[in-house]
Length: 565
Image: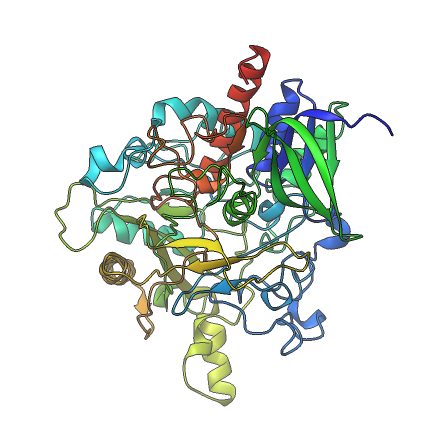
C-alpha cells in the first residue's frame, strides 16, 4: 500500500470562499487539495447564454412539474438555461420545521454560485463591522474593523475586476483598482435626477463585470445573460478566472464530484487531520488528509459538515462548545419590486438595453442619523429600466387586439422597476440543525432542517418604509407607478445572500470562530464562507466573503511558515 498524501491544506468548496482560499494558499506555496462536490464546467458546453426563450421546448420555463414546487426565490433561478447547474430541491430535499421557510440554493460545480451570481461588489463600511457599538446596541460587533479588511478588499478587486463603485458615500467606501463604470440607461438618468430632488444620492453600481479587457479576459459584450453563466469570462467566476491559474500550479490538486461528509480529528492532538467525502460517481466514501482544513462550501454546507462531524468531545457538533453553531442565521430584508413606466420615454425606438446584465446606478443607504423607533439600521435600492427580454409594462394592463398591441409596443422602452435590500438581524431562533427525523441526502449524508422565519416586526416596518420611499423616488422621476401588492418579506435564503451560523467573535462562549476565521475549539480548522458573518448589512455579501477568505488564508499560510499551526 502506497503512502497517503498529506496536504498542507484541504479546502472544501470552489466558489467565492473555497475558490479564493485555494488560490491564496496555493499562491503562497502550500500543497493544496480542493474538494468540489460537483463536476468541472465547460462554459461553451454548459452555459446557454445566447439562447432565446422560443428556442427552448417549454419557452425556457421547463416541462410542467419537472422541478416540483420550487421554494420562493428559486423560481427565477432554475429553468431550462440552468437546470443542469442547480440542485432541484425535489431531487435532493431538505427539511423545514413546522411553520419555517428557507430557500436553499445549491449549485454543485467548479465555481459554485459564482457561475451565476448577481456580480454586485460593494464593500461593507466601518459601521457595518461595529453595529452594536457604533449604531444601536443590538447584536454583536465583528472582531475586526473595516480598516483591517480594506487591504484585502483592494486585493480582491484587483483579482476579479470591478467596474464602477469609485465614489465614496458615507459608510459605503469606494472600490479601489477599478475599471470604468458602465454607462447608465436613459431611465436610470431619470431616476438619478428624481432622487436628487429628494436629496438622495445615486452613484455608479460596482459590478464584477469587465467594462474593458482585463487580465487576458474580454470586455462584456452586453448580452445581458449573466444569470445563465458567461462564456467569455467577462464577469468574474472562480471557474474562469482562478482555476485556470491554479491548474498551472504543481502544488494544487482539484478533486471534483467529492461531497464532503465529515472533518476528521486526530484523537491524540484534537486537531483536524482531514476530510471524509463521498465520490458521487461510485457512491463510495474516501478520506483526504491535511495539516489544516478550510471549509468554504457555502454557509449551509459548512455548518452541515461541522454538525455531521460530532464526536464524543463535541456531541453537539464540531467546534460548537459555544452552542451557537447553526444559530443567528441572517438574510436581507427583501420583497417584490415596484414597477412602472416613464411617459416621457413611451413611443421611443426600441434599443438594446441589456447592458452588463444589471443596473449601472444604484442608491446606497442614506438614512443614517434619522431617528426611527420601528426598525434598526437601513436599506438601499437598485432599479432596472429600458427594453428587456420580456414584453414590458404594457403586458400588465388590460386589453386585447391591435390597440392593446400598440400600447405594449409604446410602453416597451419606458419600463422601470425599483427594489431594494434591507439589513437582516441576527436572532438565535433563526437556526439550522441536522434533521432529527433522519432525513439524508442522495449520498446518505444526514441532511439539515431549518427553523427560520423572515417575518418579524423589524422586517415588516422596514418593508413599509421602503415601499413608501420607492414610490416617492419613482414619482419624483416622472414615472407612473403600476398597481402592486405589498408582500411579506421573502424567506431567508431567497436572494442567495444567507449568512451567519458560525459567527466570528473574540469570546469563545458566544462565537464559533476567532478573528482569523479559525475555530476557537480547533485552531487548524477554518470556516471562510458567509457562515462566519456576525451581522448582515444592506450590502451584497460576496465581495466581503472573498476578502475574508483571502485574509484568513494569507494569515494561515504565514502561521504555517512559522510553525504555529
